Length: 516
Image (cartoon, rainbow, N blue to C red; front, side):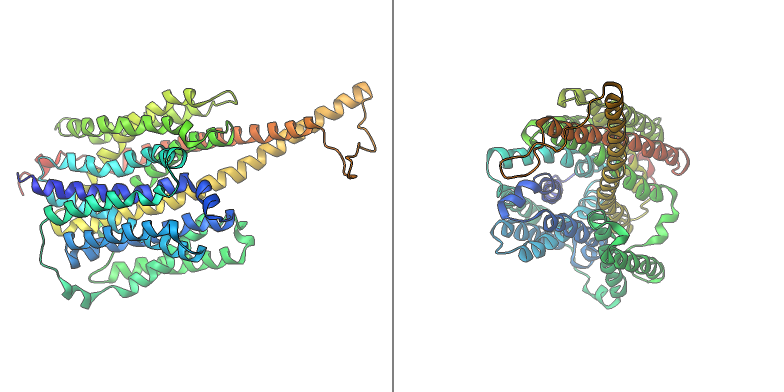
């Protein structure tokens, strides 16, 4: 086997990891970035929202365009867009320029991620395809877990600008490897005569409206906001029209007919659910450590670094295990989900005394369970691809659901934080009020009236009241985090049911494609 294309695949991998860093590292360091650029909280929420909206669009259209422009040429275009849009952000003159650059950055990230799966299916023979899928899985398990460590490096040790400037060496290396090592095919510009422009327009409108609604809904009080109502109506109309158009178009962006294959349908649904679980399961400990214990990324990064480091061993090990004919990939997935379930249930018992040390053992279960789910999922999905021509269509279906999972995960966090936090705050304050009046009735202790005043004539709040308020908010955050872990455990059970019922057993690629 010629090793030169492997270096080209390595270039696509570096580009995909760079785009993931643009998303995850920026999200983790967003508070410090807003402070450095003088951006308010409400304006800062659009930095994430615009990125994800553009990423969904990019993931859906990229496979169609790579066939038209060729894999090598389209990858280089996406890498150039990723690098240019990232480098300019620290030097933007105003917030509007940052929004435009984040849109381009998200679009570039969406264009790059599907190229990795397509390149792996094209470059690697069936004998080593599982190891190529392990390379793709790095972007779903390894890179998001490593993002906290990278954010800690730039924000707490070097300089915040390197959150964006890191793309210079990474994109340069990726571009050189792709330019020198990937084969140049003949472009097929005649496909533009059958361009699915109606589908592209509906995709931009529908996906943009849906992702924006999910990201901004909680901040704008959902359907009490006119903007959210309009976005909900637009997405409810545009998305069904998009699906009908893609089903009927002769050269669609999304070939929905392929979802009739059970394993590919499982790939799209399973990857969506798995990413919501895995991203939330890794983010919840970090959020708890930051909100309750006051950790900085430099102090909390070891929690997710444990997951990242484990993937370098677990993903190749899973490829080796799944290459055995006797191993049922569905059973491997169920074992992995059981470990993730145990991790969520164990983490749900957190208390105010927990710090990062208490999370290590439970995150280790996540580190082992995640590759046991993602690798069988990718093998079952890609084994449904009957010919190289179907590879881009399968990549579009799987990766579009992956992008939507990120917006759904953000909505999930906001929903849990608002719903359960408010519930626990009310209950704690109600109980505290009952206890206070019980003391007054028993001992005749009445509140001081009129209250003592400060020198400027304002009521003086005793220090104990501030401490009490902090304790109540802290306890409500702990209980809400515990509830979130329990909901993730329930989602894991749902995915276990899907694994047990939807996919069918498949053999390793070297056996599955042996007669073709």
